[in-house]
Image (cartoon, rainbow, N blue to C red; front, side):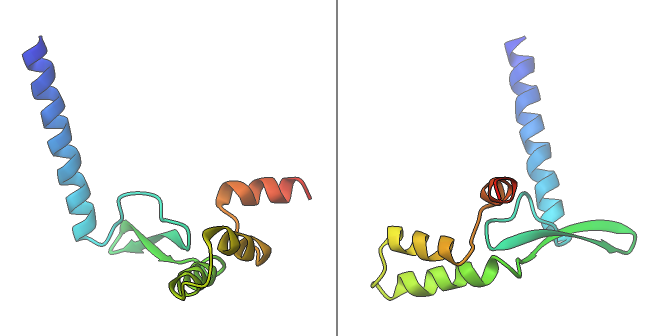
Length: 101
């Protein structure tokens, strides 16, 4: 049974890799977009393609974070406070923020 389970597990992993590779070849993305980006669904030739685009609200703030941090004049704490003051929220923070207003 252990041999069968090992074969099944390896085969399942290979199929997952194959599926993710194929998805990437046609322009799809493997998971949730990082902060500053957003997942987008498009229809191309009758197929749904999931891609990533810059989030118009959070993207500029993430760019600002990298630019500020690259100067060497900002601490992470200072940068977090600045971005929070400018309205940057993670999706979970945004839900809590709007719910508690």
